[in-house]
Length: 265
Image (cartoon, rainbow, N blue to C red):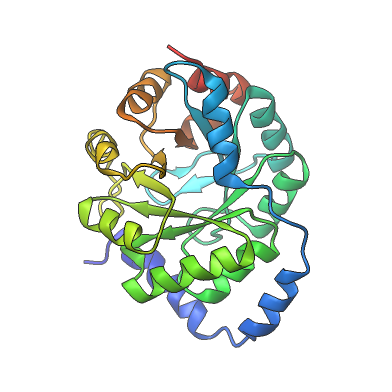
């Protein structure tokens, strides 16, 4: 039986296989754009000012998910980005997957234009064109999911991101994927506590993985953060940042939600 991840990747790879655009032309176009905002640097700066027990927050703009359905289908990306910034978020993450998450490139452009925060394009990157598209739509970082890519793709897409001035958040789930991330020189690594096969959350996953990451790697914990207590636990485990979506988009007060996550214990 096909898993959530299988279905999502099949759809993205099918679309990529019929994309006949010129990679060289798009890379050239990206080369004329203004510099990116520095996603990893913003996380490092934010955690440095958060105080003991504090953590940087990557606040996500997320309309729905495959497992839970609609979360905030009518959200205003402009208002939400400004609210996140007011609450002290270090960076934004914006879903641009249309079919499964209800996001668009327009959401990313609108959110980035509304604030001064660096933005991650949160999507399922399966081709070099996806990497360039992230830059062209205005993102400052691109997501590379180790479980979705073979070694050559992970290496090539990481290199292309660097060429374009993008930070690459390499998402892992276990020790083998961490080894693969380190092998391509990843300096920004996210541990997704959600199993991409079952979409269930394993709250111990990130805590187990943090001490195994090399010095100099900016460590991000993704998914499964249900409140400030989770954020404190992850900060104590050695994470610089938490990426939080569902909690914030359904909170009713996103600025206060970010501030509560970021605050030191």
